Amino acid sequence: MQSAPSPLNEAARLCFLESLNILDTPAEETFDRLTRLACVLLDVPMALVSLVDMNRQWFKSRQGLDATETPRDLAFCAHALHAEDILVIPDATADPRFEDNPLVTGGPGIRFYAGVPLRFAGELTVGTLCVLDSKPRQVSETHLAHLRDLARIVEREMLHRSLAIDSGSAVQDAGHSALLSSEARFQRVFDNSPTSKALLGLDGRIQEPNREFCQLVGKTREWLVLMPLGELIDAQDLGNVTVPWQAVVSGAQESLVTEVRLVTPGNPALWTELSLSALRNERGHAEQLVVFVRDISERKRRQQQLQRYQATLEQQVAQRTEELARSQETLQAIADNIPVLIAHIGTELEYRFNNAVYRQIFGMEPTQLKGRKVQDVLPADVYRQLLPCFRRALAGERVEADNVRYSPDDTRIWHASYVPDIRNGKVEGFFVMSLDVTERKRKEKNLLDQATLDALTGLPNRVALHQELGYSLQQRAAFALFFIDLDGFKQVNDQYGHETGDQVLQTAAGRMLAIMRADDIVARLAGDEFVVVAQAVANQASAQDIARKLCDVLSAPLEVEGVQVAVGASIGVYLNLGGHDPQTADDALALADKAMYEAKRSGRNQFCMVPEH
Image 1 (tube, rainbow, N blue to C red):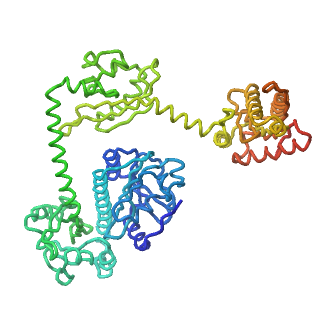
Image 2: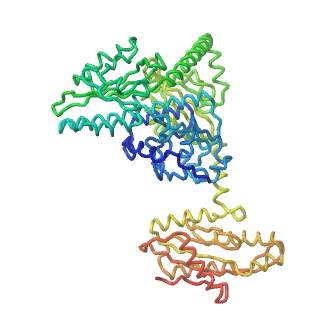
Image 3: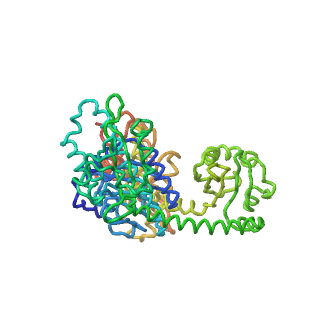
């Protein structure tokens, strides 16, 4: 795994991130809305607004991920800080930087990543807007353009938030002393700020521009001081500022955010986003105005491209819709031949449209379902399970439901999507699309079994044993652990061969399963080593009785391929009582392993208890 190096301007970057006052703040709908939109636009299960701090990455907003932060040395986003435009990882397992990253090899199992740097003043990158998936994928340039646009919105919202905090602080301090607007304060707040800001008088004249503001408009500070801000604004856009400006000064409006063109030496129509707030005294009267100006010319260019693309797309959709509307039979035929359960459900939870797959599942013709209530068609328990999804879809939210079984007699498993039908800003119902995922679920179960079951005996393997044992220790449950090593197994293996040895191991596993209870654990560690965990055993007498039974059943002669062989068992017994402080699974196994070797040294085919502390 390769950790990303720190940017050359790391100190300045961290100072700016700290100045935003956003780290470790509660979730905000403004940012959550953008990550939800990223998931929808790129059709991914996970999206994050990730801020890269000194030793961690912290998520201001997250969709599809429970963690609120991760170490920086594991963060994909730490690599994205160095990207000029966007960092795309189609398959993390094929990238040497990430192939052995714990976020790839373990939860959440990241395979695909795309992150757009959140960058301010051209060089201060504080984090990313990123999307992730647990499966590899390719992403189109159109989708990447959507992600870039959303990242620019995230940047804007972060700056608005910072500006609001700055303005709020200024309002609180204004009543104390007019000296808070001194030259020293201006030097700190404005000249060292990486964003374009200026202080204005109530008449609109510039009183104090910072360096970034001067660079943006291409004028010196001396030239700008006492100039009306309106003289920098294109005459066509003055109307966007004049009336709201007075509303901000009077207090009728808290702030102003608008888009205007500035007339600058290098660009006669530089598109900018202008944010205006008032600094008020303790009586609430405005004393000064703070203006923040951001260059959005690139965003405008992309918006225009997107609008042209959307216009073309809408034209194509309208043309296609008109064609489909000419023949309802054609539409029904298309839906009937898609191997997906498709329906349109109205606001009263009544069926409006169904495809032919409903005939296969419910035994009813699609035409018979039209107008019927969903509650009258679905089994009662299925309806109760899915009703919350229906309500969320009717509230305008796209919802997914997994592991849906439409009938107790049907073994198929479905994954359902509920997409709101929104027309003219109003939810008119929702669409249902259910996909048969039975085969995928079977493969997922097979992969899980391969990871947690021993291939030879079918018993839980070391990984599964550690999970179960760790859970029992965490719950402070009473249990007895038996560490078993087969005596004489090596001689059988050497004399009769590995196939006979494998059958001996399988027979030994079957004998142990036969004498243990259903809730006990019989696992194979490796070679001829087994572990048995007997639940709810709280005294030595019971543990010793189980150990004797295991010795007896494992030492009984067994016949393999017409050959009678005999092995024994040396057993170390560790007794965990529920009231004791829990140990780790490795600690418990180590104690029982040590006791097993004591039993082997004492003559074999016997057991030895771990001494009580």
